Image (cartoon, rainbow, N blue to C red; front, side, top):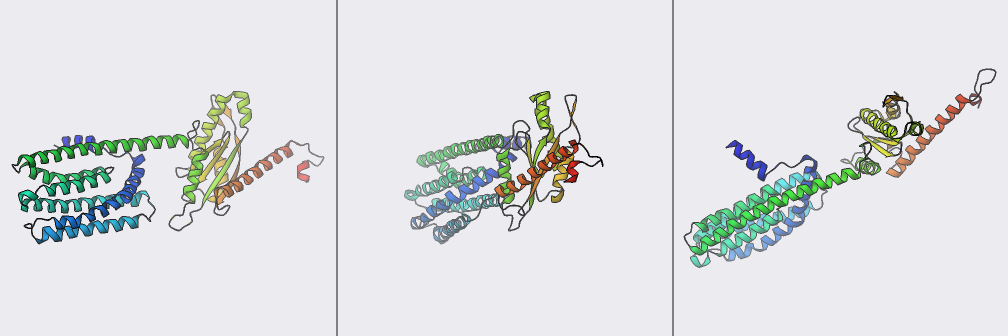
Length: 390
C-alpha cells in the first residue's frame, strides 16, 4: 500500500524543484491576491440568493445561520486579500499566504457542501436541482482561481462536488443520476487540467530560470557577468529590515595577461582566465559573488556576512593570485591590480561605487607602473634610484 501511495504521489503530486519553489510561491500568492479577492466578493453576492431560495424544511441553522457564516467568511477573505495587496511579496510571506488561503478555502468549501447536502435532502422534489447547480458554480469558480495550487484546488473540488454528486448518483432518479455522473466526470477532467497546468507552469519557470542563468553567466569561466553583478548589487543594496548591511566590491585587472595570449595563444589564455576565476572563487568564499567583467577584468562582491575583513579584501584577493599557474605544463605568473570600495561609505548607488573602485584600481596600476619604472632606471653613484630622489 505504501508503495502504491508513493507511485501515486510521484504521478499526481511530484515534488517542486527547489530552483523554482520560491518563484512558484510568489506566483501563487499573486494569483490569490488579484483573482480570489474578487471571487470572494462575487460569491458573497450569491449568499442572499441562497438564503432566499433555501428549503423551508431545512431548519434555521442550514437555511439562514450557515449561509450567514459563509458570507462573513467571504467578506473577511476579501478584506484580508485587499490588505495583502499593500505588502511586498517575498517567498516566506507568499508561502504563508498560499497555506492560509488553501486552508480557508477548504473550510469554506466544507461549510458550503454541508449547506448544499442538507438543503438538497430536505428540499421538495421540484427544488432539488437548484442546490447542486449553485454548488457546482461556486466550486468550479473557486477551483479555477486556485488552479495553480494543486492541493488547494483539488481539495476544494473534492469537498464541493463529490458529496452532492454521490447523493445525486444514488438518488434513484434518472435525471439526478445523470447529473451526478456529469459532475464526477467534470471533476475528473478538471483534476487533469489542474495537474497539467501545474506541470506546464513548473516547466516554464525552470526554462525561465535556465534562460536567466545563461543571461547572467560568463560562458568561459562560469562566473557571473556584468549583468549578474548588477542584479547582485541591487539585492545587496536593498533595505534589510531597516538595517544597513555594508559590503565591499573589488575590481581586479590582471597584469601580464596580454603577453601570455601573444606568446602561448588564446587557448592558454582562456585556461588562465578559468584558473583565475577558480582561485578568486575559492578565496572569496561561498557567500561572495565573483564576476568576470570582460577580457582580463574581474570583480568580487564581498557581502556583510563574509569572514574577510573589509580592510583586508584587496590583500586577500591578491594573495590568492600570488602563486604561479600551472597551465599545460607551463608555469605562468599573473599579477593583478585591485581597487576596493565599500558601501555605503564610498557611494550611495552602483555608479558611485564603481567610480570609487575604478579610481582606486587606476591608482594602483599607476603606482605599480611607476614602481617598475623606478626599478628599471639606472642608479647614481650613491646607489639610489632616480625615482627615490623625487
